[in-house]
Image (cartoon, rainbow, N blue to C red; front, top):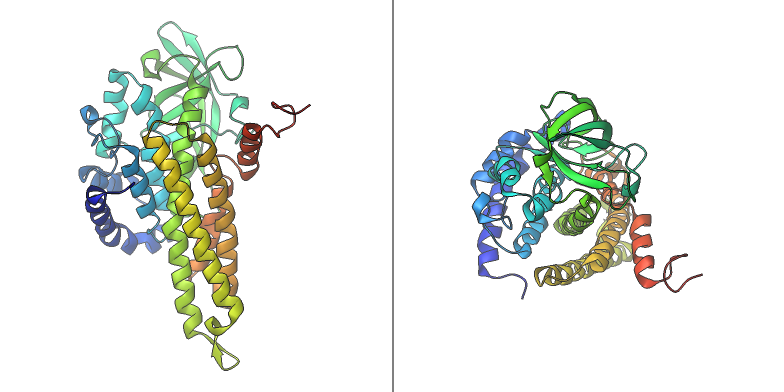
Length: 387
């Protein structure tokens, strides 16, 4: 069994926190195109939510990954996509490699305050010319004595305008593209770091997303996570938790939209009966609920394997792919059943429609997920078993 009574205790505390401290403010934060990350994260950190599976010696709870997955699923009950995504960056995207491979010194400096909520973190991988194609990044960190001197830029950086530090992937050598990169913790207040702009996005409105430039930014080499040249490998490992997190955070969000659509179509009348009474409507909603439950089973299976120390690349990739595809299909179908009201910004289904579209893009586009799976199956041209 993946979850226990201990999981349920934390789950109930998180549900209460979301109901009291987050959901009442979501509409305000969506209109403002930003939420107060430092204030919210400090509250979450004080309750232990930001380090469930992080090392005890740096302020975490030292629990296994199943607790982080449980939290990701519960965050789906937040009535927007932007805030849970920002929390997920803090817990499951910018910090896993640091927690796993970082020196004690760098973990004290960056991980501990991220767990306590004193620091807001962001992850710097994507660039204008290298999104899903991580190996093609151009940002470089040149060796200069005991320092790195960083030049380049990053794009689509969640938490970017509020972050205290960035987990930066940069080229630290001239060797093969999979062996010349390192992950480096870079304070955002460093000289030469510029937040160029906050991006105006279609969805995830309450989450701030930035373009960031690095102009001769000097940081000590001790800020590097793990070994030099292993950054690509560390990031690929970190991606598995990111992709599982992204899939798990969709579950309750999808169920919420199904429930809201049932309520709306039950009360909306057309041609003398409720919209819900039409077979095409209640059958489709039943299909969508089934798809959500199938996705949950896949995610739970992957989490069990991760807790057991197994490689979950295949299952995490499948879960991420399915979550993105399902989010597009489900929100589109539900919006249609809301009719004209579905096309207004005042309804939850329109927000879900806009927010869920990112799942098929962020953390590796659907097409990249398919490439990964085909490579593992030996069906990708040029891979094993193919000419």
